[in-house]
Amino acid sequence: MPDFMTASPLTMPDLTLPDLTFPAFDPFSDSLDTVVDSLATVQNGLAWVMAHPYLSLAIALFSLGLLQLLADSVKRLLKTAIAIILKSPLLLLQWLWQKAITPAPESTEARLAQVLQRLDSLRQEQDALLNELRTLLDLPKTDPITRSPDHPITRSPLSTTAPPAPADEAVSPRS
Image 1: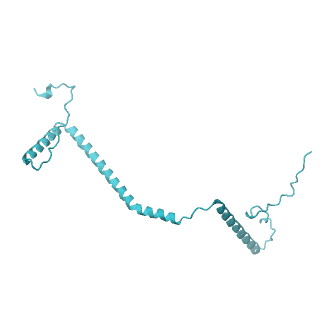
Image 2 (image 1 turned 30 degrees about the vertical axis):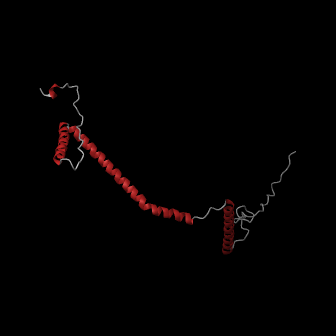
Image 3 (image 1 turned 180 degrees about the horizontal axis):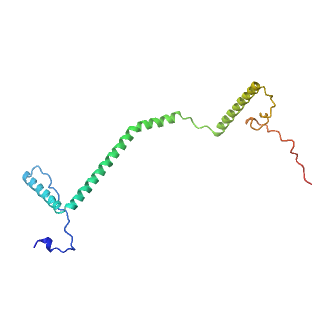
């Protein structure tokens, strides 16, 4: 009786791969022996594939998938490396240009004085434009709509004088 009929249904078939090592290439050996040994190794591999078709198909598909993943990874790596290599001189020049044209940071006190001076000049320009508008519209200078010089908005931020205190708020001591 053949072996497959005597095997118990609970035992697994032998799925070990055959030894597929190829003999080392030796130019001084008999070339016919090398060819025969190689063909014997290939025949053993083909016999195993014929004996286990589903498993060999699964291994072949898995191997192709791994090869495709490897090829995609290499492609992505090369694409990124080339992009970085080509962009790096431009990025370096951009960084150097940014460093060359940016001024040194000013102190906060100097910047505050500069901002206050600019606000004062803008207030003076606004007053001049309001005066010109009054003359064009023939409005009196004491118009209640316009601001007086003691108004907190029109007072210069650089001036050190305090606004006059309101006269109607007299402090009366309680007895």
